[in-house]
Image (cartoon, rainbow, N blue to C red; front, side, top):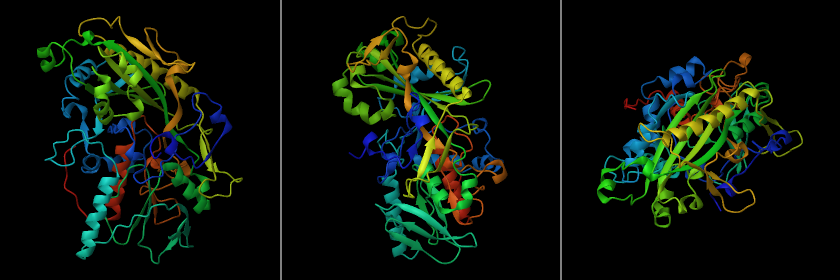
Length: 509
């Protein structure tokens, strides 16, 4: 088993306080396989607005204003609007959902944005006929590998080395603050001089600028903090003192297809709704007092023949973790099913959230303790997020110039282990809140050390000159938006800073 829950590893010890909280329980782990979580992810890639990047230092904000920052990140990830996929599966239903959720939304008063989902599923080339092609790291990375092999053969570049089954254990800095050795499970890699850079990255980030004198290491936010804390004693002053991320709510509902009218001219001509259709929409909001953010990932699906539609639905559903199940679809052939995954951000101002060394564990790859808790502000945001998700479902289930559907039903899980069921009453809090923290962030955020920051504007730990951190660890706050696009943007920005002689054309977002 190499995908899904059993493939996750958890290189830390969870605190009892987190484990005993029924709404938290654990934090999702790492996927230590080639390609990592990018082989099994949701592909949602929204671009945050500047006012959503709360407490980000000016250097980071200015970086996002670089004309190539967002276009290059979107090009790498093949980001496309769900409204532009138009492959007969993302079609009329997508248009209808987008219309019903157009801003302003007076019935969702906390909403600040609403638009068709931005998904990393676009065509890899202008001539490709594949309209839905979810991004994953192995293909592009191997493409870079092959390209560098050709360049090395032509003496125009260097080989890109990829090492598998290798655990990075520790970085060793000399007295001048320069790292010249990396201790790994397969031996120590060492070098001389000051030109080699060690970059700690997270998630699916790829440094797409090759340089023969620079070394790039790709790891996730918690492992990045683990390496920093085990390598540099000075990092203990700030690294892991702040931990943020996202908590989750999951609500599934359905309405009869008759409440949608005939959204597609083709279907209207056939007098029946006879093919699979999917829609993906993104709605974001904010708590009016704390300014903490939430967003709702909406996947709507109509499947007239769930058994026959299963393969296409599995391939084109944006979010595997938030897809309609067989039980939910099997008796919903005359319905539109809404699957709503809502994510809210933990506050950055909680000293009870931390990631620190465990003195009782001698294994330096796992000798960490992790704690997440919720503050009153977090709980208020979670309540608001749940309320907004129900409000969003009401809006989607309301035909134009009408009232919410009287046939709106919600999916209820059966706690006795039996199959779930549809009912008109809303499920309770314990049924919709999903244990498990995702998108961990802020373990080594950018900022002055006096203000708690761990790294400078290039992601360098204070006092270390040639190690750079990127990924979610850099974010001062988590926001609510899925972090992949922003992580890639800052990683590419770092690459351009490390190799300023390479210029890029400005592409449109």
